Image (cartoon, rainbow, N blue to C red; front, top):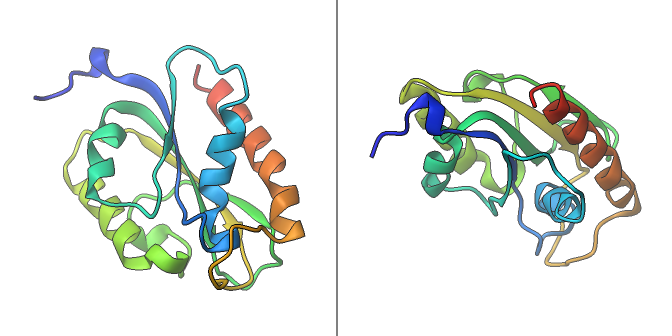
Length: 158
């Protein structure tokens, strides 16, 4: 079934990450934080886990996609960057544990055409952690900051 422009959800907020690998799960933690917030109509939250091609349909059903993901980019842990990528080459060089999967997803998303605007909030982490559900203090402090930036981003659209 094809989704017409008028049937599309307004905004999809998609958190990517593995919450069993500590800081790598930042995107999911931000989405979980936003679930406690009163969001405008037309905003959908989605825990994208470690990403997969199953995310293509919800992404294409939106007018705007806001991605939140961890990146190992050499910046101080907790550094937040707002990016507007067009293809996987526009993303930070390393997208942690799902590097290939998420980049392939983004390329497939854009190659399918008629795609919404995408904004990425990339949150720097130091390195992949062993199995743990604990976040570092820097990333714990970043969660409300990223959530606030995401809310500001969607208010520009809604």
